[in-house]
Length: 168
Image (cartoon, rainbow, N blue to C red; front, side):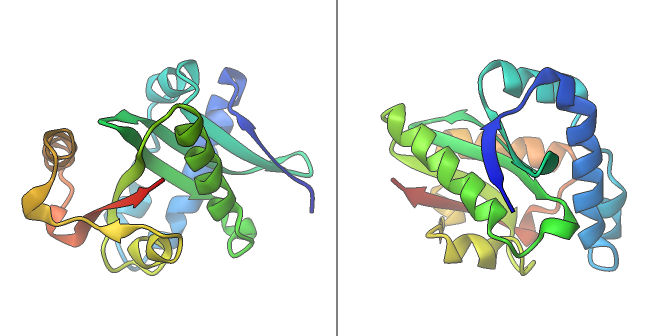
């Protein structure tokens, strides 16, 4: 398997949306509403591509995964990471996280942050294995509190989620 991590192209937006839909199928039976949710809107993906905030992992000509991120505070905030189920367990997601960390270091940033489901095995427990630590909900920085407000406005149950960080 040959793996290449590179910036996403605007011509790949619909393929990225399909990848996100396929990845969400892992939530069937656990969080059905999430599994049925629409993927990221094309304009959001295009905006992240424009700021170099969307990387893809390509293996043997197939888009296997992507990570979407943006600057927040003194770090990069990982908004989304999706891996096609056929490529799960091959450390592709971990490779994407490392690529984001390299980008943050090159930009002189101090940390990676994210918000994820606390108890879903391929969410918070997986990120902990990659060096992320839970943040105290009562001590979240204002920029992370704003992200929480947006999650609540979208109907996410924040009691099931945790903010995490990984210092660089």
